[in-house]
Image (cartoon, rainbow, N blue to C red; front, top):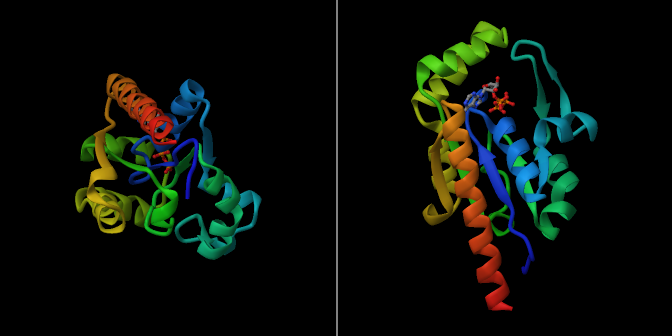
Length: 176
Ligand SMILES: Nc1ncnc2c1ncn2[C@@H]1O[C@H](COP(=O)(O)OP(=O)(O)OP(=O)(O)O)[C@@H](O)[C@H]1O
């Protein structure tokens, strides 16, 4: 499948900074920010609300149907705390954001998460669940792990992804 623009997943445990990164990256590059949380809610790609976890129970098939056309066109930044459901053929880069435990704890408690959800997310970050999921689901050379603790790190992450995007465009233009 040939796309004139790549698709990028920005993933990581909730609170690591996916939305902040995606918004800034979209502003700088003009790529489309696809907030999966919003798609799930707005397009009703769910099987109801989980009151214990305070989140939607996602219907993955409906979600994939909802974003397929955009993904096939390319130029999407997909923002979600899971990545293994997106077909390999759609994805050109997977960025896994990482945050140290103390910082993540502060960010999640500020959101007043239910205790069970807070603990599960902390465990997930400590056990590197998202990084492993990304490595298991995509070729290792397209998976990049980036620290997201400070604003400076976010800036340099965005610069790095922008650099990668420009290189991708050059390579793709050369290939056509
Ligand atoms: N690199 C960073 N430096 C400073 N603050 C950050 C950084 N990354 C995220 N934050 C802050 O942490 C909080 C959570 O960020 P954000 O909402 O972007 O995370 P998220 O991974 O998208 O969460 P969710 O999965 O729940 O949507 C926000 O208050 C944001 O400003």
